[in-house]
Image (cartoon, rainbow, N blue to C red; front, side):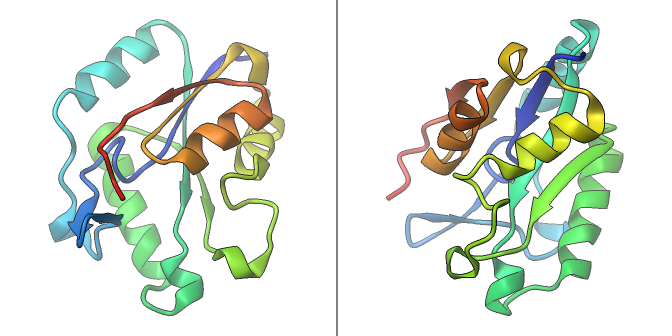
Length: 150
């Protein structure tokens, strides 16, 4: 089984758009800004033989302010920029009561099954409490990037 680094997308790989002290995803590729140090960090993690897996909540699809196509165009853009292959996405909002929306561990569990990942030997990196809770619930060690969001 493989060790993995689970990475939230917005705020970990790319800049989250700050509107009224709350983080939002970019609306299109022109708003995507890869954060400083990300490319080097991913290179080091690959050298250490970690599987890199993006796990991201994209509730604007459920809310009707974005589409799956728009989200997937951004994911493809980030994938091409950073040479990332594994994206697991939840398009739901809390009211949908799905099993995949972080803080539930569904995205990580699905990735573990699909990619043969040992969760207890893996790590979750996120910028929201939901990311950290999902990682902990899945049995991963979790690292919080604190931007002091409201």
